[in-house]
Image (cartoon, rainbow, N blue to C red; front, top):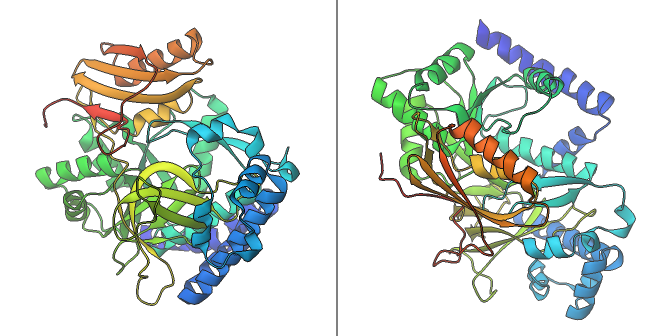
Length: 456
C-alpha cells in the first residue's frame, strides 16, 4: 500500500506540484531545460560534436566581448572563436586555476551580467575553498542536468528517497531549519546526517531506513560503505530498493560490492563539483560514467598541458552555458580518465575513473566514523581559509593546517574550534597551524584529510 501511495505522489509531484512550484511560484525555467536536455539522449555523436563546437564558439565570443580577463587572454592567444574547427582549439588558452579566480575575480565577471549574478562557495575537496558567481539561468540548467543523470538510475524527482548526506555544521536559524524540513518533505526526501554516524548508532540508521521504506538511497560513499558493512555483519535485511546513488568521493570496487550486497540493489556512482554541479553519472548497462557533454566540455591533460585520453590526467572544465562568470579550462583539482568511445546507442563520451578525490575517514573517541567530506563542508563557511589539510595523528589528536588569508581573524578561529569540538568531541586535542603552504603528494595532489591511525 505504501509503495502504491509513493508512486502516486511521484506522478502528482512531477506533473502538478513541481511545475506549480518551479514555474508559478519561483518563476524558473527548469522544466523547459529538462525537456531540452532529456531530448538530447536521442542525438548522434556527430550532432553532439557539432552542437558542442557551436556552443563553445558562442561562449568564447561572449568572453572576448564582455569579460575583461578573457578579453586579454583571447587577444594575446590570437584565437578567433568563429574560425575554430574543433573544440580542441581551446587548448591555446591558459588553464584557469583557483588562485587565478581569486586574483582576477571581478575581471572574470561579464560586464553585461554585473549585478545579475550571485555568489556560491565550494568546500574544496582538494583543499582550496573559494567563491564563484552564477546566474539564475546557470542554476536552472544545472538542476535540469542533475535530474537527467539521477533519473537514468531510477532516482526520479518526487520518488521516495533517503539521503545519507552531510548536514549543515555551523548553527543556523530555526526558521531556516523549518524551511529545509518542509522543502525535503515536499520532494519526498528523508535526510539522515552522515556526520553524526558512529559505531554505537549504526542500528538506529538501519531502523530509520526500514521505517521510511525509501525506493532510492543517495549518499556519500564512505558512510554508505560503513553502514553496509555493519548490515552484512549483523545480517540486517531492508525492504527492496530500486537503486543507490553514491557521490562526493571515489567508489572503489570492494565498496560497491559490499553496498550492493547489503542493500540488494544496484549502485550508481556520480561525479560532480560545486562549481558546475553534476559532471557525469553512471547508468544501467554502461561502463563508466556518462559525461554531460551538452553542458560541459571536459579536457584531460598531463603535467605538460598536453591532451591525454584513456589514461589519468588533470581535469579541465568549461561550462558551455555560464555567461555571468565563464569558467573556461578551469582546473578543479581532480585527476580523471576520459574515453571518447560512447556507450552503445548514446552520444555521450564517458568518464572511466576519478582518481583525485579520496578523502580519508576520521574517527572520534566516541566511536564515530566521520567522512573526510565533513571538513570541506565545514571550512567553506570559515572566512579566510585559502587552503587546508587535516591530519589525524591519534584518536585524540587532530592537526589542522591552514593557509590563511586576511579574513581569518580571531572570530574565524573561534568559530572553527567551536565547530570542531562540538561535532568531533570536546575532549579532542586540536592543533591549529597557520602555514604558508601545504606540500603536495608525489603525484602533485593535495590530500585534504589524512588518517595516520592503523586500519580498524
